[in-house]
Image (cartoon, rainbow, N blue to C red; front, side):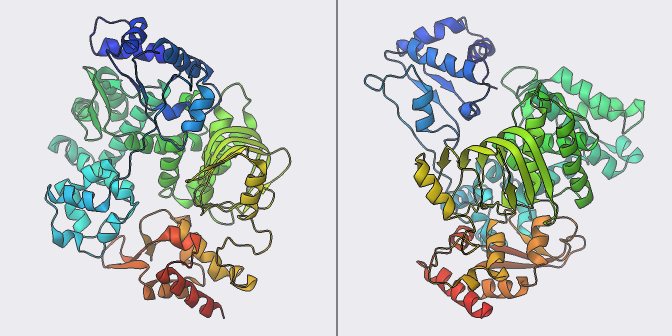
Length: 562
């Protein structure tokens, strides 16, 4: 974490085995001899606890003034140009230059070209279940996933239509592979499930160690120690050495820049296993050190939400109740209550729709809510930054003394009556800071009159209030790639809310008629059933009549409502 940039510079110089000292860096930058680059700069987006880091950045700006350049890399949603100019007191607009650059997402055309160079064929791309993977904005277009999709084994499974939740699928595929690579001696005395559990538990403990030490790499000695502890739970003492040796070369880990250190091959994998072990720890009423001292950011919370989709309903319900109980038991001497409240908010979209939570007297650094949230009552709750893009919060009830300092939102965001007025609202196209503009924006997205967001002004209120119309909002906000009919009950609560709705068959048929959904029938043991991928979700949420396809769809919806 970027708590002390000077220490990190000294560490980087030592890793590179240079004779330069950290106090010489500003001088070298000032004369244009080196460029200083700070990655992960979005960690400084939270205003609490980072005063030292911002002060050090200001010192660097002043010390490097001259011919020098400093690169700050991070997600611009959290650290944009306005945030920089307000926080960098050492910046002089009259003499210093500030440039901002945005990396554009990978286009489907470029992704397909890259995969073709690595063995994918036109026959794979043309399959009905594969085509949605390469729609604009798809999760599969991220570089990490493209690299994994290029692997021969994964490619074959994609071709066979086995991909559901892409991230979960890749992780589970990698775990299954690792469980077969311990050798015959281990295989004879253990089951596949035991070996899988060893891999999961081992990587979870590695993720915990990295989080607790606030670092991205772990020494090989520490890996061996963790592997030995976990191995004793799986095999006899005579076979522990085999598991230890295999643990250091699992596919999830890669060599770090430092000799003798390993790291997760991608931050998504680190957050995945950290999420899994966080659920396990809270269920046992354990508060790990990283829960007490770290800040749970949106990147972790986004992966945490996806992991909770695969937690059994009773375990997730118990988890939420246990977290609420621990919040009431702990004081404010550390970040425990803040982080527990953040994960509770994150689970509101994956808990049962009738699961009613109560959150009282707590401050939260960052919060993330996706899809359609279950009922939640908040009293005396302060949220520094709330990411509610394409989220429906109308089941929330905000009581007295609730504050949201900064809200990240978009056209798909829905808020309840009484939602606290933020100091700023970050939209994709602009930042709102004027109280009048913010009040107007909130009023357009709360159920004051019609109980539904809509840009189809000519629709009567009876249509916008109809349950079929509300179901469109739920399906537009549903984040997993495939919506699966069949064995969804008791597992994916978001899917239950859609597929168990009495109006789902009518909506499904209307989506199919207007080619807004891809349908895949799978006849297989285990996860067989009918799969649906809804296309153009953002357009369905926006309910714009500018597009003929969307307009025709909503005309049929109106006719169905009658």
